[in-house]
Image (cartoon, rainbow, N blue to C red; front, side, top):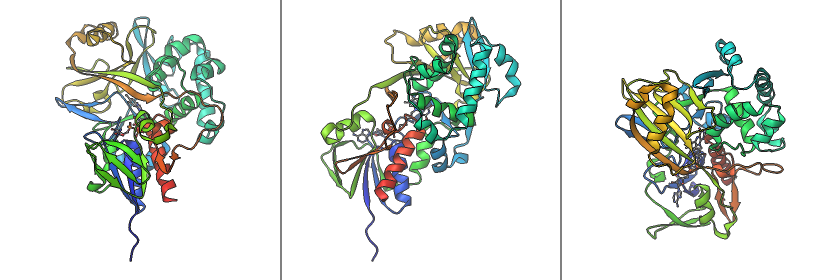
Length: 413
Ligand SMILES: Cc1cc2nc3c(=O)[nH]c(=O)nc-3n(C[C@H](O)[C@H](O)[C@H](O)COP(=O)(O)OP(=O)(O)OC[C@H]3O[C@@H](n4cnc5c(N)ncnc54)[C@H](O)[C@@H]3O)c2cc1C
């Protein structure tokens, strides 16, 4: 007689819960993912509106992510790369600043762009050399600082930090003060040096969908909110109890802190972002590149034309423009203000743009301040309940997947 399969109840069908579920299922256990919303993906969702694919907040997949790359079938995602570098809007025009190691054609333009001095650009090269030779363990073992202090200690000028790093990493960390951990900075910098920022051909939600498709259909219950958890038992909003051998809380940090008894987990602060989408008859950039606001003024942090990167993001003959504003400012008519702000960047054609959606995401990324000492494990076990998610690892697709996988490994023993 074969032993009954170990039944694991997983609260949350974001990337951490899905990665945990896939690993458990493929090792012969029986996961059941209980997801509050109408579909899997958590913070990685895509809605189709008038034929445009609108990710819930502009985000990218870095194709050098080591663990996510092993778990996912990347060819099936049909990843479309961004060019390695950025355009920086400054002094009334866009300047090209490229990763010249990956795209040497732009060496001269990048060297003379007024975004930092030549010495700053040589410092980028030296940082690239040092970080790309570090293992992830080396990065984790280094002293953790705020990214701003780290860049100052690396010798970068104030102008380079203000004009380039605040907008480029502002768009990644969702904060321009650069208070995020320098280990997170080094990790992200390494991923950008080793690979490309990409978009799956049919939207970011293809990533969680691919994982969900590796599970039996009855392993995921959608539209089902969990209100209480115990070891081996969860209670649903309907009052129904589900029983299993193990419980995993793979919800976001705030929900996890509320669900797990004893408040052992501290609720983090959150980084917020406002994402705006516009449709246009013609791309204002006509290339797969991110454009940054280097002026330090205004609402816009970054702009990109998603359909220049992945054509299926927009119907034929149309362009899909994504704009990120950090935080959720209470600016009235934010759409009009953003368009007016971009007129000097792209000209009067911006007046023809058609607004598609504005998304205010309050809980986009948990804050990631520097951590004194060594990093902990990227999951917890608290009173017989496992907890995983990006808040226990790094606030990224890679971090949430690692956290889910390690949790499954610990359960499997
Ligand atoms: C705007 C934005 C931009 C980003 N940019 C990038 C980027 O460019 N690159 C990158 O790598 N990462 C990026 N990230 C981060 C990345 O998306 C997240 O770190 C990751 O998706 C978190 O996954 P998770 O599974 O830990 O949490 P979540 O995605 O939050 O999943 C938690 C799940 O739990 C469910 N849940 C919550 N409460 C309950 C309950 N009571 N009962 C049942 N289910 C519940 C939720 O509905 C959700 O599906 C970005 C995130 C945002 C929002």
